[in-house]
Length: 331
Image 1 (cartoon, rainbow, N blue to C red):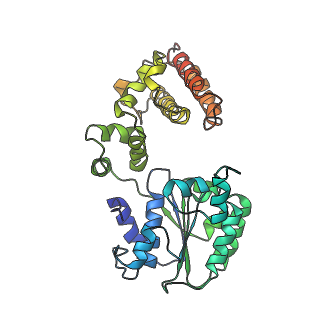
Image 2: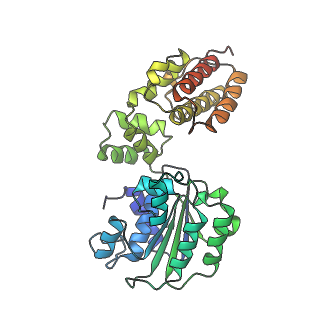
Image 3: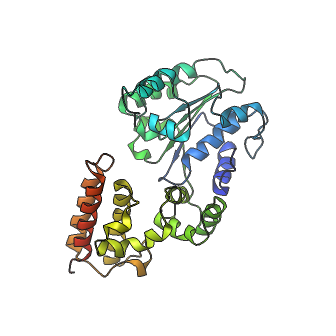
């Protein structure tokens, strides 16, 4: 069991002191919704819980650590299950192994039906049951409506925690049946200290935190991608010069995300606001507002095919070419 970040531990204590059978954890990505949700279910199912949360040593805590707890149902898209190391249903795993289909990016109705059946069973360990849904916005209307019926009439010993990075996409009826909690933003000093404790170099931590807009977990994902933090600071000038080679380690989705942030900062500067993702000194000279607005629309269109480009190399060249034109437009 890894030690949760200090801001996650504080929020966990706060929520555990309150009562409720269903929580909705909401906020933008990178603030730890999944980690907080897992901290709650650990404490709910722990055999020796305290005000601080789960003990971390009992058989129940160990079962969650190895993703085999009989009283915990995890509802996620199959891609998220695989990424986070949760086991898939045997039938689903067989279909993926035989390449009959690709992992789902939505929470499938079949998984929801299994969760509903789980909620109706007797607790195996006697501490009740828990259902963790993440990211909750990946439920389609059919799946969400199936969950709604269980939320309206829950079994006596089952609790739910829904973690979302886009809670506005959830059905209003889902939101109304959960106690809401908005994720806390940690301050920069605490975030940098945590990143350094995770192995991010001291000099790279503030750069990555800025690149992530102050979201520490997104910053850690950037670090885990293998890209040099210095490449972030150099990106505005590199794309303004059309240097595709400087971005050879970037995937199309990563570059589109970075260019969206660069475009945001340039538009912010045009309106007199401070940039959020880059240092002022890293930004190129002022560009045409009309060109930047058109570029923002091009990036939005490109993001729709970023995950499955016909040729990633050509897509990178096209993205850099369009960025170069926008950044060198005259005000």
